[in-house]
Image (cartoon, rainbow, N blue to C red):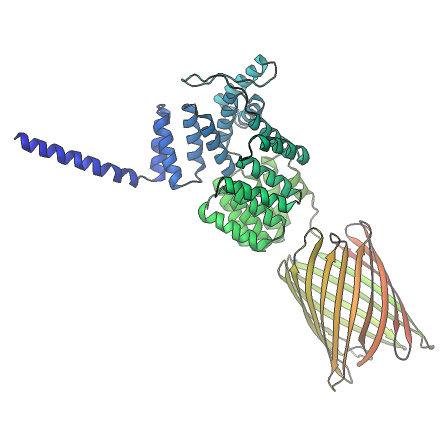
Length: 582
């Protein structure tokens, strides 16, 4: 009998030992979280911290679990661990008020009263009924008064007494750098962070902060070095990986940014900063559907994320919905009052979808051949942000004859770097212009704009003109590049033309455009290329130049002159033109 009872007891012990681990492993994130909350509420802080850490092992980007872990570590008076948990939560959800409150408590207990007060006040203002936040604000203010306005350690608010400790100079310098950076004083912020780095050269948070500051100042190589140092200290550090994504965006390297952000999202699919960056990259790729989806995922996690709301506005504006964009910007501004970035978006005037071009030229011919005139009117309408339709009427006179040509054209952008156009024109009762013409062309931005060089685009124009006596095909590939921070544009065009009886001609056109002031631009060039005149390929050499003046945002005026040499006469041309948008 005694032997049977011993056997039953052994079996029960065996089942208990083997069953318990399986049950623990079977717990879900939600179950671990709920158990942790219950343990923390009854002040079983060690057990609660363990449960929350196990939940985070299954889902590292769970901001709620991080906040609860932070409060559990506060209960254990483990301030460094609590600071880390709240910081990680704020990196996932920057406006998470509970995380801000927890960080205020950490700073208060660490004696960093100047850092603790604005955090606590922020929570108290956002939640007027939060008695804990109001009490914390009052305690911090009393501590500041008792210290004569200087930050000194405050007594711990837990059951365990904490010894007085001097303020951490590294934390103080980092907080100073953070405030200066938020105020836009980047040089002073950089100095504060560099002083902190001397005291803690292996602090990955300082390295990331310095990378962000120098990167925003376009010191890209130095920024990359800081991010790499941070990753060497802490491999896989999320903030450093996100910094490298921003760096790629700043450098205009969209393909690299895409690879980096996809890599982050593979391990942290709900990280709001990574999702915001994914949306920004999608906007650069003109993938508006993905951008909108990523911004909406951010808002599902953090409904008061102003960056995502402003991003929704950017998507709508890119799609041509300016009213919808302004609505989103106003919602974002309500969350972040005084935000310069959002106010600048709202200050952008509504898009002008219409464009009117007027131009007129008078040419003086040598050898007593009289004058030619050439006038035109063009009207374009932006149907969508990617599609523009336009019509153009040309009236030309030569040797007492007048031709009127009517042209229609469609321009389509397939991406920010690739566009295409087609056109068709007809001249009723043509005397010297083509009876009809068809054409097409494309432009590809091969190199994006960098600080000193770019963009560089590769282009091609093709056209067929049908005259009464001949049909002429012309092909003209050309390249255009900008230097001197975009102020000087250089282009080179090759011109090839052939008629339907085997006559061929080749030439080139060189042109330079220079922005000499904010509203004034000069252009000039030289051409040695065939011109199609009354169905004939005529070799010409031309020197040309001019100036354009942007009178205001919608109005531009142009003046041009040219001198052309032909085998039978010379031609001097003076032109005037204007463009207005409405």
